[in-house]
Amino acid sequence: ARNGLSYFITAQVIAKLFALLSLTLHNSYRAAQDN
Image (cartoon, rainbow, N blue to C red; front, top):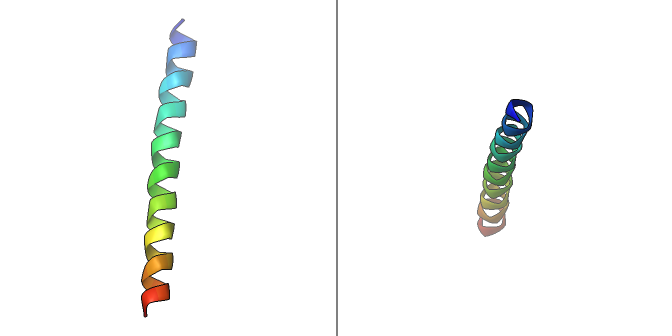
């Protein structure tokens, strides 16, 4: 159970990091399009 929980937490952290990275890339892409 502990191993499954740590895997779940790791997956959540990776998902948050991926969403943040994708949002950052999207924002910089839009900024580049505006200029």
